[in-house]
Structure formats: C-alpha cells, structure tokens
Image (cartoon, rainbow over all chains, first blue to last red):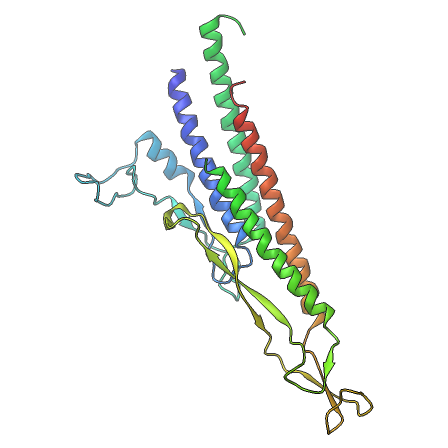
Length: 129
Length: 137
C-alpha cells in the first residue's frame, strides 16, 4: 500500500521537476522574439501514470505512441496567449510566474507526502521513531 | 537531476539580460554624442535574443536563451546647424546620435525585471533541491 503511494508521488515529483524546467524556460525566453511558450498538462501525465489512457499497440520500439501511451510526450503543449504581441512571443510573464509558483508548491506537497510515507514505513520497521 | 537544468537556463537568461543592460548603459552614455561625419556618429545598439536548446531533444521543452548579436539602430540621425562647433562640417552642420533616451529607459526597466525574475527562479529551485536532498530525514 505504502509502496504504491511512494511510486505515485515519485512520478508526481518527476512531472513537477520537468514542468519546473519548462516554465523556467518560458520565463527565461520572455524577451526572445518568436518564442512560443509551452506547458505540461497534468491530467494527461496522470492518466499516463495510472495507465487509464487509451494507447496504440506498439510492436516495435520505433512505433509512434498514440495519446496516453507511455512513450508519447504529447502532454507538452503550446500556450494560447490572451494578448498578441508584435514580436511573435507568446510568453505572458505573470501567467508563467503564477504557474511556476503553483508548481513549486505542488512539488513541496509531493515531497512532504513522500516524507511522511517514509516516516511511517520507518515507524513500522523500527516500532519507534 | 533535472532541476539542475533550471539553474543553467535561468543563469543563461541572466547573462543575456545583463548584456542588454550593458548595451542600454552604453546607449545612454552616448546619448548626446555628436560628430561632423555621419559615418562616425554613435548609433543606438540593441541586442537580439534567440532561443537555443541545450539538449537536442526538442520534446524536453527546455529552452535556454542567448544573445544572437547586436544590431545598430537604422533610425535617422538628427542634423543640427551649429557652425561654431569644432566638429561641424563644411555646411556648419553636426550629426547627433540617434539614441532615444525614453526607449532606453524602458529597455533598462524591462531588462532589470527579467533579471529579477531569473533570480527568483534560481532561489525557488534551490529551495526545492535542498528540500529534496533532506527528504526522509
């Protein structure tokens, strides 16, 4: 039981770390002409981890994965800007900053879940703190 | 560890923004410079940013930034009739640099905001990394 939740939170941490990279790339490129902001979709990533997504059958490692398959990176999407800019850049710094702060908070949440799961495992093994 | 890439990306962004600040400072410093020869007058400079990917994997979504080059502004020079000026040409004209001080101030503010954003990213990511290191203690 505990091990299951550890694996789920490990996947969550990986996702949050990757999203942290993508969002910081967006903020780093806030002044780059023609840069298109990107983001990861949590729902797609979650479906992938839980295996509920409908994927294509892959009989060779070279086959393309459909949506929901483990190899697909389809959850990386381009952001639709609310305001157009003249230089073709779609980064909106406030949106990105809000997403970045939220993502960092979720990362911390996953960390504390992993932490408490580890603590209770240790408690079960040793019988004391 | 993928969070270390974030520090690289933000560091590159700070680098690019500091080049921009430097160029803005040069522009402001030369805002009033004049010359009798239009080819020798200081022209406003602007850095051009471009995205570069540290890893060849486009799907990772990691995009760093660098300065692709510095271009000179094509805006026309001001012509000022000042026959007593030591640099004046045969017609008594001097050419004033095309630096627009208002534009440069806006550029400076924008660069400093972007720089601060990158610093915040590094701080937050550093916190996350430190917390990850102390996991399970």
